[in-house]
Image (tube, rainbow, N blue to C red; front, side, top):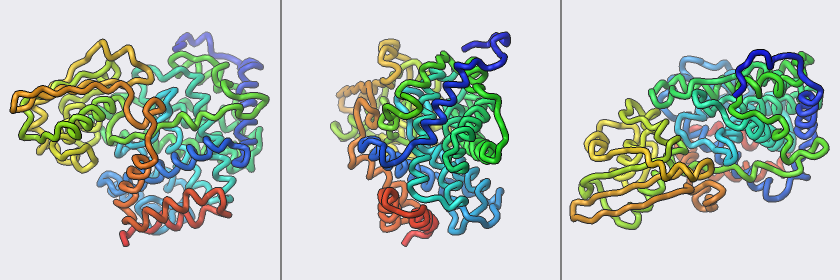
Length: 465
């Protein structure tokens, strides 16, 4: 990360050209030219994002937030509400649901969550603007690709910053600007540089402290992207090249401007990073997913329960250890706790959201679980998020499992059955089985639909049939 203020100054012609090429690629993204594999990934990630936001809206914290905001009537859907709201409130409230369950998508080549943040902005904005379904899909894919390139260029966020709500904000702003401006390249470039110049960055440690204002991180990022897009489309200007001359040098871990043009040729996408998105199959921080997969495999194979367990030894790689919350106080920091997630999986037979809500019932088992850093697991980074679980059973048996690459990642791709089971389970909490099926059908029908209305209408059916 560059911190010397002498590096700040007028953008170079090269830095402005990087933004120009990215803006052109976003503005010229069309669904018909997106390869079939990328189309499939886009619709799968959109379904996953909608399901995560819908289920997140049912969390007590989100119900309380909606009551406090009391959104006025408007054209945009708010998950958990049967009527529409103004787009500003809709994007804020839907954005806040992103991190509640810790089930949001991820991007395998860089830590971050592009699909769900881009979707949260574009859904509300698309309804307000009454855009066509293809226009929405063009912006969604273009925004994901833009965000991914920015993620590659920054080389990660500094260790004290959270990986949500920062670099993806710039991608979401570019996508939203394209949608509002009718895919105007100059406006998109202003949206990119405008969002970059705002430089959002958030405290990494809120999650492990159980500070639930953490949910405003993605909400703030989404509303920022919305506001930048409206301003850029209205003709407000940004300092050209701010993405390369300010954001990269001051807020990136290892910035390389040329990396942002990886897979960009003559202002178009030559390859599609959306195929490198991954799906979180556990309601926990992705750094714990190796551990969560390991205990799930042991439970399936050995068929033991809480009463059979004498001791559990959990070992994780360094980044997982850095975020681990040893003594969680609520379900947010429990999702960043190896002890809590392992205890919940053993106690209830599988790790799910409900198992993390009542920590008092988990304490006796958590007291039998130790967690430590295993340096030998560090070598598998960045793609591997490794964990080992060793269980001593009351009958004298010792069973152990190590997982390097969790399920849902490109190395161990999610199956269609796993992906659909996750989406159906989450959607059914709000819409029931029939409603969940309708939402799924409307998402996969978007390439043939005229508007977003059939989908958003299905998202307002908040009562289970």
